[in-house]
Amino acid sequence: ARLGGKKCKDTAAVGAASEVVCVMVVNAAQSTAVIAGKNGLLETMKPGSIIVVTATIGSTAVKKLAALAGERHVSLIDCPVSGGQKGADAGALTLMASGRKEDFDRCADVFSSIAKNVNFVGEEVGQGQIVKACMQGLVGCIYSGMFEAMMLGVKAGVSAEVLFSVIGTSVANTPLFQGAIPAIMDRKFKGTGSNIANTYKDLTITMALAEECGTPMMTTGTAKQFFQAGITKFPNEDNQCLIKVLEDSAGVEVKRGA
Image 1 (tube, rainbow, N blue to C red):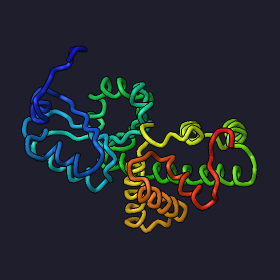
Image 2 (image 1 turned 90 degrees about the vertical axis):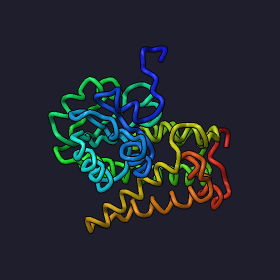
Image 3 (image 1 turned 180 degrees about the horizontal axis):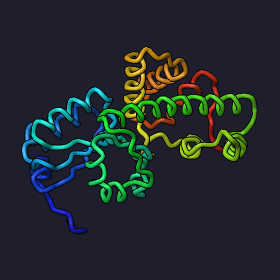
């Protein structure tokens, strides 16, 4: 409000006051509650307005919400995001939007204010969720591989700092590596903006899509099981807590000075 925003008492009031509303929550149940539940957006949004679903909820769920919105003559853009807390804080997210192109174009100013990379991936609602599911499958595999590599090196007698320095300047370097490994070495497993529950949820969506399409994803399936082990032991921690699952087996810790 200090920056010029308008306070609203509930979600319905937000809908009544807005032409475009971005819904960034955790899952399909929350998205449905915010959009179509009691005091939800669809109770008050005017015909011709737009809902942008930025949550990762899967293509089936977002299509159902688009149908409900359509009954009220409200458009819906399926627009998952990537970039984590740092990207959100910096207004530098990557967007993967699908829906009517004219609706996408109307939201150009909104998208440019929150994202560095704005991608229009198709005219069919749900295609954004498919792109995000593919990406998150790869993310899970990258996390699994880099944690195993760090554990192997430390167990074999090389320091975590050396491994980070070399891999971090090689073809294997990624933003995920640069974010997670220093946190591991500093033993920071909470509050880093990458909660394991969200990634596990995303991998569940990925594997459900793979099953639906009859597509084998052996590496991603293994990564999902790795995340299952991590969320079982450390449900309130961030993705890098997976290293502790490996540390328990190997009997060493990936930390500075080790």
